[in-house]
Image (cartoon, rainbow, N blue to C red; front, side, top):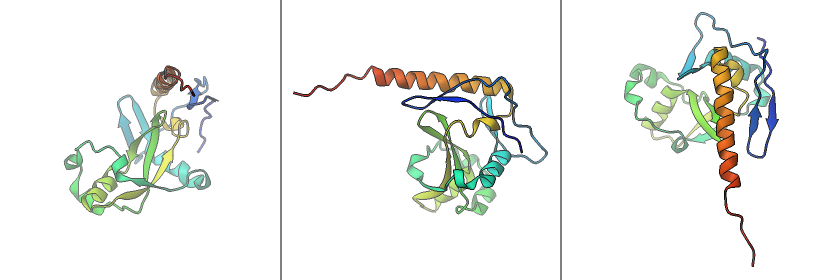
Length: 168
């Protein structure tokens, strides 16, 4: 699988994304699983295959369930799938905005772990830009770069507006 490159410019808070004019969205194949988040749709099947192929770059971490937002929609999940969910299989957290991670794969595993009173789950935490090549449209890619950079700008602006500490 060919993964398009994504150029970034490192800053103190995160990396500013630059549009890659040669970006090619992640193509879908029959049976692929997707995570839709508004206009941003990620090809989970291809992303997990990439992680598996590059395991040394993506160590499994232990994530506190309390750190994963509970949107209260567990009842909308297929309860048979929740019952069958393998909580030993890592969930997938993607850095959607600088320093903010969203669950993009593993909702059934999280629901089961919560129901069973677990405190942690194994997870892959993908920093930006590792998940960006798995967006399924060029429009989503362009909007994501714009979104990410606006969040980075907001964060950098908030950091620069803090009063400096003075020593006496």
